[in-house]
Image 1 (cartoon, each protein chain N blue to C red):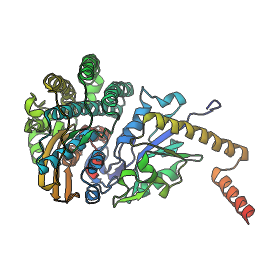
Image 2 (image 1 turned 90 degrees about the horizontal axis):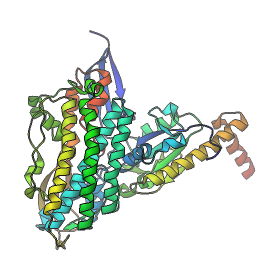
Image 3 (image 1 turned 60 degrees about the vertical axis):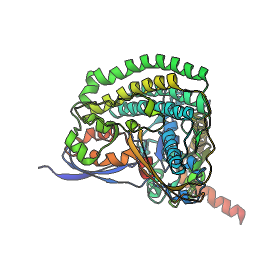
Length: 359
Length: 163
């Protein structure tokens, strides 16, 4: 047995755009235990639901996290709509679905880039981010924002995409898909990348079920579950099959996320084919009174929203359970026994979003 | 810009932002916007850095971290506060855990507007920071003394003038 020592990791660390702090107990080069401490980005966002009008709070909900901002705004609206018993127009549902899947592509491309940076493949990192800019341009074209869109409102969406724009997007996706296949093949087939990812940080199916992991992390361990099957937005009319891998290591997680990018392209194509004409929003009358749960599949996994209204314009309670929060226990499990040099990759493969975890 | 002699390196710290500004800061470093053409490189080590980019407001937990990073950076240094949250807390101003903008803890030289700040405006902020850094560097070289000392002398002479 070697000497035990503690290596602090974070909150400011080159591979992390966000602050997370881990105290790594190491024996020589092996990690024995990881002790997390969080709260660096805690703002107390859920509390201001009592001070802001429920219609204005959409903009705060979008800023729970800047990466999946659209989905946060959408899920909040969806929850309030369920409380108020508002049935939004079908076109709005489809538009939400399209933006959701575009967010997923952008988030996964971003993650692939950060992963490449974590194992020191800088040109791959740059290529991933170059591809991602195309999606951001489309966002800017359709919503006016690059990362924070503010197109959701209670009762529908604020902007429409006309037929010309949608068919233009589909054309661009076809070109992008070819480039992305070339790019992601590096992750899946390159020898050097494989040596860093294969058999690192294995999480078995049993461990996964026990720790309650969510999202791509769960699907990489062989559990076929996708919240998109639960029918929110327009997913009830769209064909989605969860992408599953069985190995449970970092390679499997990368594989699942890469396949989900192509799945997202497919969903957008289906949605554009089926989208009906009509209104994009209806007026939500009255005040929310009652409570509702909404479960959505974010790029990082399943997020749960809870909203409770009391008949006034200020809500009683707003609560978010974010995917990273559910995945942190599995991170601690996989770091046990890992090499110190692999810790950045292990942290990245859960795709941490500390900003939504701490709110 | 023209007389730029050295390549300034930046360090990025996420205060308590929503990630929106952070990914835009990273987008600045990647091919489309590419601040590396100004010689700017992102580093993780505060002791290598000249420019500190901070996004998001200050809360009770990260106050000390920001102070520490600032103190570890060598003189001369420039602080750029990116986004409205780094100015005064922005949309999170009313939250109970937000103490305010970055200037509550450390002196800020340049504020970049926006929520989320656009890459173009972040680059503008960085370019201005590079100019400011050059000015501070000149002052440093001309006087042949450490920047802290120089500022101290300046403050003292100001006080004398006032009295």
